[in-house]
Image (tube, rainbow, N blue to C red; front, side):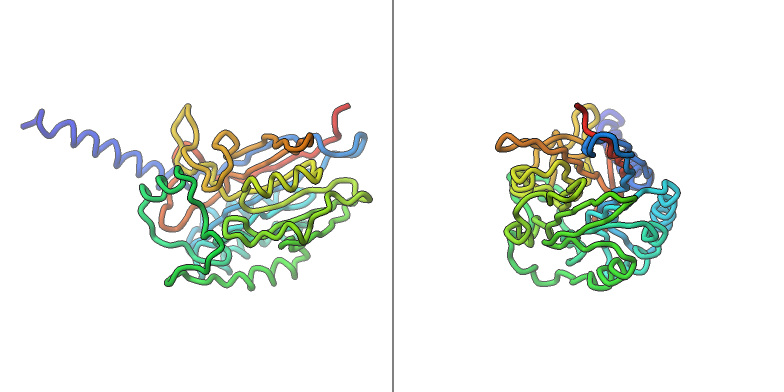
Length: 309
């Protein structure tokens, strides 16, 4: 009897322990990633950029709120928010409370699909299978019946009031210590709200640096930005894979980006041009799958320095 039931019970116990770790510890084990990117003109002072992404705030997440507030102690030169702030239509006040200290700094932002629409309860196994088959997003269709519309307008108004620049299918600028920084942003490609034609034309020649910003790093957006000559692209959306295998990495990216570039700094090349690409693993999860494994939640402090050579 012991031999008959021992192995299944052991597997169940290991699975339960892994789930408890993924939900109870790792999903709240917030980290700061630090990277250096050589994209500034030679001889200028470095710029410190804090990228926050995929907060997916749910009411009551006090530890996440306090951690985000603490990031203001880094004193970044500016903040880039790459979307999916919400996972709860009641979460707007808590997002704004969490980001309040960071909104004292200059910033830019784009939205992701979860800023517009609430998540749906889904079978995780079906989700993984669909992503492995290359099925992503809402394919440009109207949200299904029962999908919650999030109050994204409240977020937009608060960010705008704080002076953050809205990059929804448009361009914007920040001026820091005499440096002109130009930004080109897209609305979320995951739900086909991106309109590259409205921002095409490449970096602005009179700017010291042009940065491209988008929530989901779909290849069509990366190809467009890189082909137009942008030296740096910032994105989020992937959650770093969220459920990863130690020493192997992510199983899916939730878009058509390859898993080798699911998080962190890499490059993208097309038409003889090369851009640095930074994909944030984000600091939250879908409210219905509040787990992470081998992929802790994070924000990133990017130090932009002068180009080599």
